[in-house]
Each structure stands twice: as structure tokens, then as C-alpha cells.
Amino acid sequence: MFRTAFAVSLFSLASLAQAESAEAALARFVDGVSSYQATFTQVQTDERGKKIQNSSGTMALSRPGKFRWQYAAPSEQLIVTDGSKLWLYDQDLKQVTVRPAEEALQGTPAALLSQKKTLTETFTVSDEGDADGVKKLKLTPKSKDSDFQDVSLWLKAGAPVRMVFRDTLGGATDINFAQVKTNAKLDAALFRFTPPKGVEVIDAESPSTQ
Image (cartoon, rainbow, N blue to C red; front, side):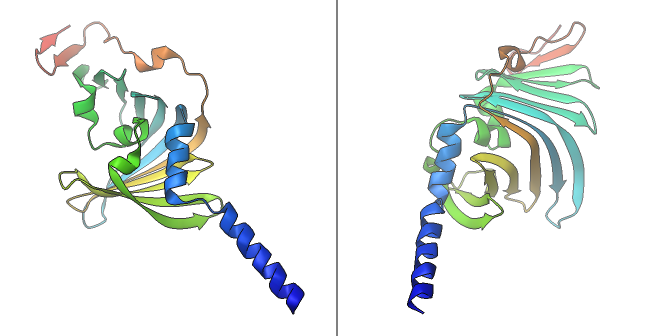
């Protein structure tokens, strides 16, 4: 009995030592991941849980502030930011909208993933448990002016594999990531955009046509 109890105690201590806190897991992502690439599938639902739209594509980020989010389906759209400006290119409409990056990304998955500052300054972090090597966190905005109620974030080996945003009206955006690569050297051209000839360019301050 003594040996059994001693073994159980050792196992419990080992489990506690291996368990990573919510704050530590989030810090490992923020501080340890300088670049991130993945494919994604995205499902949007309304306040009744009814599916509104399915979409998919590829994404990449390079910290701080550089981001590329490319939809392949149901229609082709591209969102690119170099940290200063953001370009939204709708291929079907042949239209590019240019806006200041900080303003355009506020309250979006891109802002949450690409910001380098400590997320605990902006969110209250709750530990939702571990399963199969994946840690689930819940991020609740500290500001009452936030565009969403909370964000659920699943981390595996320090990198996101799933995110669920719940907005203040009860809708949700569920994003699953696959083929994840972290800390690879990314081509700087991924985060630059030159509007194609003949495409309408709408600037946030001075609309013009190119």
C-alpha cells in the first residue's frame, strides 16, 4: 500500500509539473512564435446557431503587425497588411479598399494573432483544460467597448489550432487551422500589395480609381 500511495503521489507531482498555466501557454505563443502559416476553414453562425457561411483559404503572419489572410472559397478575397496599411482586394468586384491597419483590424482574429504585446493586458485569461496535447483558453475582453463577448483559443505546441469568436449579438465565428508552420522565414512580398491595373482603388481618406 505504501509503495502504491508513493507511486500515485509521484505521478500526481509529475502531472502538476507538466501542466502549463493558461498565462504561460499564452505567453509561449506571444513570445515564442514570430511567424505563423496555416490553411483554415471558417464557419459563421448567427445568434440562433444557424450557419451563415462556410469559407476556407490560407493565412500567414509575421510579428509584429504583418498579416495575410486569403479566402479561396466561396469567393476569392485577399486581406494584406504591412503593419501600417491594410488592403482588402475583392477579385470578383475588381475593387481594392485601403484603410489604416490598426483601425481596420480592431476586434478581428488578425489583430489577436498578430499583436506582439502581452494579451493579458487586454484580456482576462481562463484555463479551460487540456486534452490530447491541446490546451484550451478563454479570453474575455477587459474593455466593455469590445466587439465580442469572448474568444476561445486552442493551442497545440504553443500555436493556435482553433479559435472561436463570439460577438456581442450572439453570433460566432469558428476558425480551424491545419498544416501549421511556425517560425519559418517568410517572404516579405507576402505582406505587400500592389493593386492590379484597371482595379478600382478606394482609399479611406481620398477615394480614387486606378
